[in-house]
Length: 73
Image 1 (cartoon, one colour):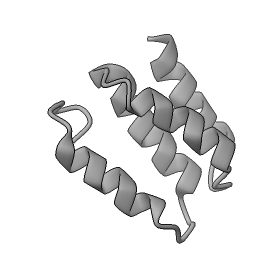
Image 2 (cartoon, helix red, strand yellow):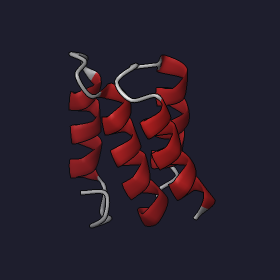
Image 3 (tube, one colour):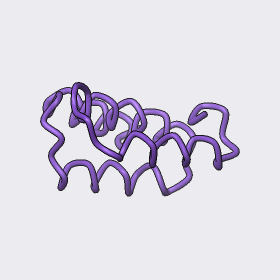
Image 4 (cartoon, one colour):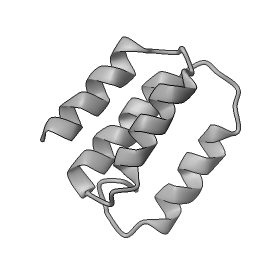
């Protein structure tokens, strides 16, 4: 639950900045394979990268297709 809120808060606080350090921190939560935290991590990463043109969107999409969790897909 704490990771869920932290990912959403970080994503919102850094909206559109594409900060690499924050992105890596949120991505680590996504890769813990927790469905609830992963859902928030995906949203947080999207908020962080909104309006940017990076290859990271493809990376996030590929992971979403690979995972078995419905909340992350």
